[in-house]
Image (cartoon, rainbow, N blue to C red; front, side):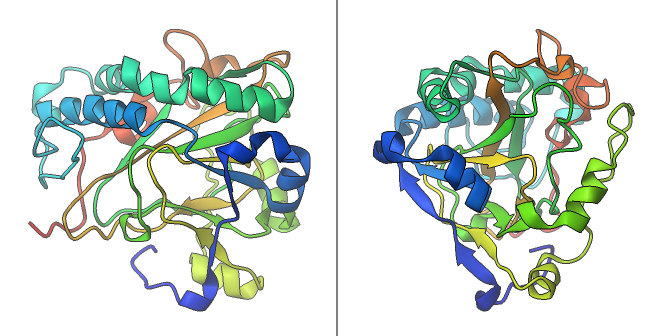
Length: 296
């Protein structure tokens, strides 16, 4: 993680549930005690495969993946800058593909989120699609500073868009971090009215943070269609993608909330403005894929 090997004693397994257990779960207790709910096999593998193919076909068009199918092998280069007129418009079109939206906003996840809230739910239109190339990871951060307006019952829904074993850089959550008051106070102190992206990354190395606080970094070998629902106050990031076959780690995250609560207008509508007002152009996914190392 962040270029350093994580010791096994600091790593732990996410607490998991199968979708068949949905009606038996006490969602409030799970979120209160753990800050997340990890559900296996929420989305059908067929729908995930269709979404992967749709995304990677578009990335193949700009020279970033080898074949126009669900394989997702990184070429080590990109022609996106030369072939795409507007990077933000391109990334919005990728993020709004019908097969992808069937996974991230379709009936399967809608039913889970309705059950989770105990009432009709709604999602942000703005989708964070994350293709992770070899050698890269996401720093630890809280989601609260980005999504503080609107509902105070909002949660993040992270979906594995394909197999993401530990070596391919999956999501990591910091156990018990919903109770790190000093870090939460700093996150809540961000100027939510600012148009600038707030600095919310925790710059201390994750293993050092875990040891200092007597906790663990929790992750799993994810399968297609696995979902984690987590609160705005759970510290999370990702492991480095260490794929020796240069496979891209593909995941998505979307915010969900009760439909009866007010919605942050920055993330809704046909052309959502996003956090900074730049729309999809502000996302890392809108940038040409590059890797700090390439083994092919």
